[in-house]
Length: 368
Ligand code: SF4
Image (cartoon, rainbow, N blue to C red; front, top):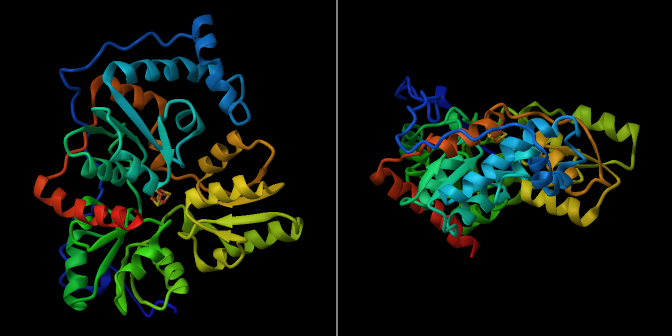
């Protein structure tokens, strides 16, 4: 059924002002545990050592660029061992990160689950701040680093914990589901989290006639189209996915009727109406592996198309795609710096973390 009610910051006269979750913060000073910077020159030894990694990305990184990246890639991989660290990378990270330094790659749900299984003492989260917070929630005794803590998210920044409390006052007794793209402060106020992989399942698991679903209005619209539960939504949006237009997809289809179009559910409804398949990043990747389309329009962040093409070079990727400026704050250079200096460490108030963790674990346990 369609969304019947949607709320935003302007709908609450008594909303506290001046606070946005996931707002940029100054970088902390290097710690006393910093290691010396390794030499980053291009040598025959580095060329030999990184040749197997270049094989993975040769279809998406030109040979002329590799000597600029390979020394840092080798230094990161050497330092990971010295630090006892593991690198988690979201599907939207650039190919030189996703395919060449990450130990675990995936969507938000995969990373959240894998974060619970790692034995390393240090986790470097290559993604945005809410993802690093989620890893910290699930690994409270480990050092969780994010190479640039300014890597935010328009969805996480659209809502605060106070907003959730105002929604609860307005709809007493109605359960609240938060997309994983929220701050720990928001997760602490809700009943359960979800990702785009499991949003419908999570909503229906609550066995309630109405559910408050936040903060993505478009994911809420998509969920509402798949369930009879009444969805009360929030006016947040992903600044990357909301820019796609249904008419640009129609133009691709008219130019080549055999083209396949797949889209992420954070896109507006007119975009999803043009798609042959809608799913989370993990579901999209599995769809491409299984169907092996000749020509594909992948409606999501640009780096994911590059990462899929690196793995499946026979699939011709047509643009459009949009870059996420927050994801692109993570670079090889700041990953190396993070491992050298053990910054920027993610910390969460323990009492708030206990409440936020419950929402994430409730989702993970539902999956099992
Ligand atoms: S792509 Fe959208 S949802 Fe993902 S981190 Fe960037 S702004 Fe947030």
